[in-house]
Image (cartoon, rainbow, N blue to C red):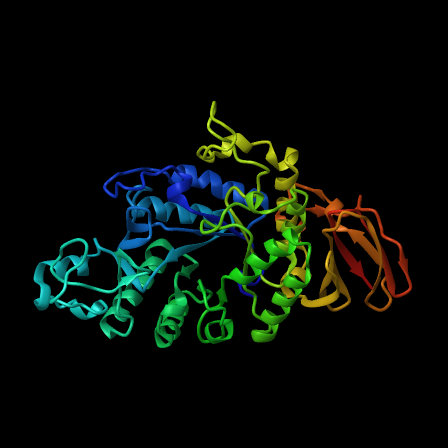
Amino acid sequence: MAWYDSAVFYQIQPLSLCGCEQESTAAEGSHFAELLLWAGHAKKMGCNAIYIGPVLKTDTNGNGITDYYKIDSRLGTNEDFKGWVAKCHAMGLRVVIEVVFNHVGRGFFAFENLKKNRKKSPYRDWFCNINFSGDNTYGDGFSYESWGGYQRLVKLNMLSPWLHDYHFDAVRFWINEFDIDGIRIGAIDEMDYDFIKELRKIGQNAKRDFWMLGELTDGEYARWVNDKMLHCAVNSPLQKQMVLAHNSAYYPMVSRCVRETNEQCPYTKLYTFVDSPDVSRIYEKLNHKEHRRLITLLQYTVYGTPALYCGSEFSNIRTREGEAEDAAPALLRLSDHKDAYMQDAVTHLHCLLCRANQQFPELFFGHYQELMVSEKQYLFARVLRKKALLVALNCGESAVSIEVPYLKHVKKAVNVLEADIRWEESPEKSLDLSACKELPVNGQRLLLELEANSASLIWVTA
């Protein structure tokens, strides 16, 4: 089993988390000691992997890489990052960094050379649609194709073999120098198939269990996620459907999305998230705050690789002192939430579910089996041999009683959400089920009571 088969990710956007200057790329900082505290927090939550980015040197807000061989000076130095990764590994945390290969910032060395040497630049073919008869908004005396319409992001020619070699060398450098465990590639569906295939070989030759995650917008997972290309892709459609389903009280949206994804790429675990830097916080999107518990349970139990975005594990994020409640949130500080593990119900739930993903192989190996779906109730199971975890959700305003037709000869059923967390134990054996109340079992049927706007995670054994 590879490490990513049972991965539970904690995502960090370091520039914003550390309050770095957004417009000053010359600024120097030293934030990896602070980021190590967040890594320790991720470990205590029960996560076993960190996705961090952007960390490479970029223009302004982090979207345009200008140096593939240097850590952003606003965060620290290459040696700082190398030490941080080593300490994460010592804690049992894998590290995946964010990269973009198909566009760069205007400060990228090859583009600087193009501006200086123009037609004589050896890097001319690295960029798309260079036209020396035109101009751009920066007055360089030539036009070029930008990414997403942003001229500060220069689009690269991903068919250039020389550029391919440059990128491959950079990946080897990150593995050899920083010992990273994987990469998350942005805008993957605008790239070249052969590049991704070769990139997978490069990564795995340098590190056997090197992992590749892709950001897709077209939803064509089967084309990109397979045994020759990406290991995983970001499941943005499911994130949208989970929010819409709770706000409209219509669970068929979620079940349909899960079913279609499983049919398109069976046995492929997609990156499952609720929050990210690209979408607003979940507590801002849900119409009913009670549904946060339900969507959190879904996030960790549908077939996929669960991922938690830094800060989403807290019930609320403080505003600046003395400002109105609707003011922009203050800088997120871990010290403000030091008691959240026990006192914040949302944080505690995330801790429990992170650990459940480590402790129950049903959640990382079990196949998905839909049991029942209606507008306001959704029941499915993750089944592995004679054991299973049953997920039951009720987003309605009334309690419901359900007889669940299930596995043959069910002998025992307990609600894992009632488990005690043994904090001193490693995550894979830290849930104590001894205090969990057993649910009534009648032959081959499980008798289930769901309160309004509630959920259960039932472990059943035959």
